[in-house]
Image (cartoon, rainbow, N blue to C red; front, side, top):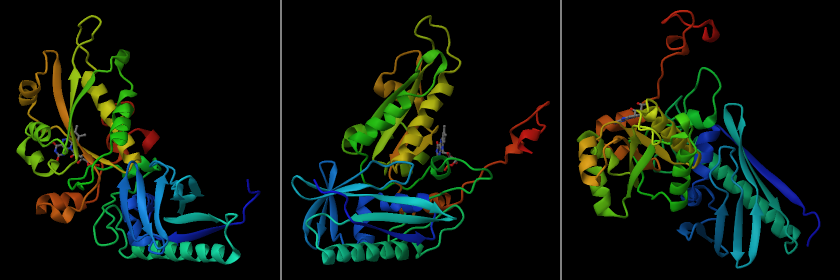
Amino acid sequence: MAGLLKSRTASVSINRDPGAVYEFVSTPENLPRWAKAFCRSVKPSNGEWVVETPQGAVTLRFVGKNPLGILDHQVSPAPGVEVFVPMRVVPNGSGSEVLLTVFQRPEMSEEQFAEDVGLVEQDLDGLKRLLEERAPSATAASAAGGERVIVKRVLPDHPIHELIATRWSPYAFDSRPVSRADAHSLFEAGRWAASSYNEQPWQYLVATRDEPEEFAKLLSCLVEGNQVWAKAAPLLAISAASLSFKLNGKPNKAAIHDLGLAACSLTFEATARGLAVHQMIGILPERVRELYGIPDGYEAVTALAIGYVGDPSRLPDKLKERDLAPRARRPLKEFVFSGRWGRASALVG
Ligand SMILES: Cc1cc2nc3c(=O)[nH]c(=O)nc-3n(C[C@H](O)[C@H](O)[C@H](O)COP(=O)(O)O)c2cc1C
């Protein structure tokens, strides 16, 4: 076992918000666009990524998507050999700092180490150029490298968690599928939502584009206006609520509320994984009941389109406009009251 290794941390300042930078860098398909010294092409393989480098194929395993900007990865140039590469995006003023540490492994000469550091610096410069190419607007950031990846990070009036600032409901979805692991985690997140009396009134019907018949069946339960765009999402779900308590059959007034909490957990888990969710009230509940045999006492409430944000330029004009429009909200004083309905609370004044 080697002692302490010599190391160099290369870094670059990028004039883009950390959420957008993280989103771009944590998507392995983007590697050939910016890590040109390292990556010629990349393809998924059994939960890992196989990267063609100038020195041959290596496998790459990223730490899962996370809200901390951590991009650590393991590079495996040969079976049984793993090289740990710590990498991180951190806020730097209104922009970002991207840091990557290179270790001088025992088999590396000084020259090889210096060359590796040089190549990393070159790639980080490439990343900076690419991401700064088109400056982001306040809320609808445009993207990098040909395809447009929209990141609609809001500028909140008060600090909020990055996940809340970057969650949004896109109309354009990419064809990239949602992995089984991500799908598990999304519903697992929903599972742990709070609910009145821990009744857990949520149920889901799901279909992926890999099963065209099932997908078409679920899609047919959406109103036409939603079908137009939701058909591109790789994963569709319909949420349903059980409307009465299992224990005593009494109506559960919190059922729809708690179904919303589960949707909220699921949606933020998706955001943390670089996925997006677009919820829909525009469904045909009676058609869902008929096609899926929903029993009495349960009600289909919403649909959820789940996937990676896609390129809005392929959308009909009206939807494209919505995808590019900034996200807007009423100010706090319009809905946080004290003393009397409608009187803005001093707490938020
Ligand atoms: C319960 C619920 C139902 C919704 N129904 C629809 C719908 O049927 N069709 C649609 O295009 N968007 C629908 N939306 C998306 C909203 O229009 C969207 O969340 C809202 O405009 C705010 O945008 P943002 O999510 O990007 O912040 C729905 C959202 C929620 C939470």
